[in-house]
Image (cartoon, rainbow, N blue to C red; front, side, top):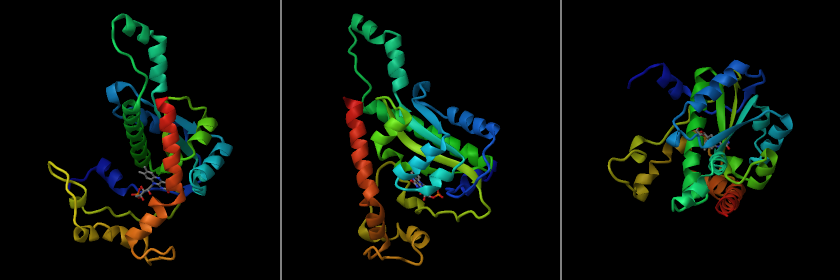
Length: 259
Ligand SMILES: Cc1cc2nc3c(=O)[nH]c(=O)nc-3n(C[C@H](O)[C@H](O)[C@H](O)COP(=O)(O)O)c2cc1C
């Protein structure tokens, strides 16, 4: 495999959940944000916004509302990435777009689900670019997907208008001395296909979770009643309270977006 400095950063990156308390410098923060904003963006529209969460009280609250993850409150640099069509909805309104479209006989519409998905793509690509930029500076990070829970609380906390949606929270910080091991990935044959989708038989799927099982649950703790590592995942994640809350919260947001 080819190796260079960029690929080395990608290869060595791992999620960081314990942070040295030293704050990031303004230059480091600015560099990470600049990189995020250089990410590809659909139609060059920048369909996302980034909120830097500075207030400790807000971080403390997020540590609770994002499925009780205390390390969020200890991160010196926290960024909330929003899918954002509000700015363009406001731009369209300010520029008299609907009126002009009506004059031209063009059918108009409000931002809808397709626009939301596109904006989510934009937000995520910007976020991952920030992750890699930070990593290249020796600054680690961790995504918090649980930011899609408790949408009503987060909407109030951050004053979010209708056509925005929290996609991910990113916690950054310098590593403490000990860094965790790299988490293995599934074999490529399970992930990358040629020309068409491929499903696997139960026997073939046996191999999928092998590296996952070895890494995550050694020695295996099946105290929650699971009999194997996949059942463990199903019970601990897929059917866990946070998953139900995520489903409820995203449905509520989608309803609000489509109204
Ligand atoms: C969309 C997304 C959401 C995530 N949410 C969380 C989270 O809420 N809490 C957490 O500790 N890690 C979270 N992670 C980090 C993953 O657990 C981590 O990427 C995965 O275990 C692989 O480990 P690695 O990043 O060290 O390679 C999330 C990652 C992604 C991409």
